[in-house]
Amino acid sequence: MIFKDADELFSSGGIREENERFLIDDFDLFRQRTVDDLVDTLILSNSRHLKRLCQWAAYEAALKFGAVPASINGLYEARGRGQLSVSFTVPAMNIRTLTYEIARAAFRSAAKINAAAFIFEIARSEIGYTNQRPIEYVSVILLAAIKEGYRGPLFFQGDHFRVSAPDYQRGRQAELDKLNKLVKESVDVGFYNVDIDASALVDLSKGDLDGQQRSNYEISADLTKFLRDIQPPGVDISIGAEIGEVGGRNTTSEEIRVFMQGYLDRLAGTKGISKLSIQTGTTHGGVVLPDGSIARVKIDFDTLRELSRLAREDYKLAGCVQHGASTLPNEAFHMFPACNCAEVHLATQFQNMAYDYFPISLKEQIYNWLRTNCSLERLPEQTDDQFIYKTRKKALGPFKKQIYSLSRDLRLKISRAMEAEFDFLFAQLNVANTRSLVEEHVKTVPIFKSKLEFLSEESDLGALEGAD
Image (cartoon, rainbow, N blue to C red):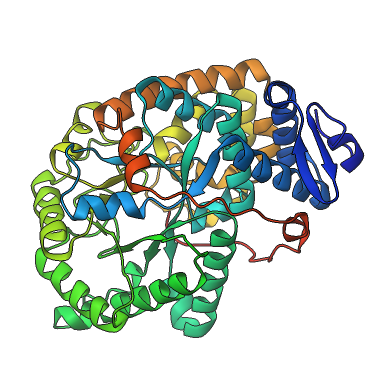
């Protein structure tokens, strides 16, 4: 049900507003009925004001319930100091569509194995093409946590908060101002984990490594300082940086040393990153064959193992981060914890699985829309299957309401399929029984906000572009 107005919202099951305060009288009724209605309204309503009220309700309810946005930095610092007795790789999951249903699946999988070391993230580009501002992404996932009875720290991450090289060349300060604005917007709503990505500015035409990495480490350091300045009291934001653009050549130990030296010098004592993204042979979305299938990709696990060791031993980081891994063969995933990989980013496979369940009629509408609206992205050598596969993520925003309006039975079916996928991934990445480690090393700081903070005008950042 979509709420029509504030009166209907606050007369719904179990909640009320009193003197600008959000109160829950019946948690069971709220979970059983109101949570779903809040999600419906957040996604399907055309009223910005009403959506903001629902976001306030979601945030306040989550804090009262015990699901609290947090930074994973304490856990990563403990890993960098060698204080964790078990090797696991934190899955960072980009949910591009059906966010409520897919997040619920992740929480169910985590509950089975007492896991808490996992991250929900969204990239700068994804915010644009999936039409999910950070405040909506957080709100919907918090409601999913309440629905599934998940309590404890919740990690929301800005993935690939990226400097666009073309925009940077056209206007350096304008691009950095736009990125700072997005960072501030995200931190304000609970993104206490941010991956800075200035890797597109690495200039391999320079003759020396410092020249190649200079723009990357300078901007990464400046954004780190900005994040430290705006982080809420008591919150130590987890920050990552990226050495080389994913999809390019493999990262080397010399590049890490040069980047870290320049980065730390520019920080001048400010607390820095806790992890480092590298390239080891993957590409975002995988390599698409002419029939639309995905080529098998071989990760250089020896490079991943060695560079993670270097990051820990020389710089006390949690280790290295692997991007572009979700379309790898199943037999590869157990290797990430074996190589002491700190974090692995997973996105495309969740999207692919959702598409597998979409009705043919909806897919035909989407694919026709892509042929019209994304035609300039089509390469001369691409087959239709290749073109559709590479661009269909761009339709998730324009078709967001149609996708979410699929029958509840079908969405539940998708959620159950996703749950099986999370069961597999969480087992392979060895995150079972990580709740005790998270509770030991992660500090939760509930930050209560007034209704007026949620009703303030949202910054219009426009369509955000960049690699996901």
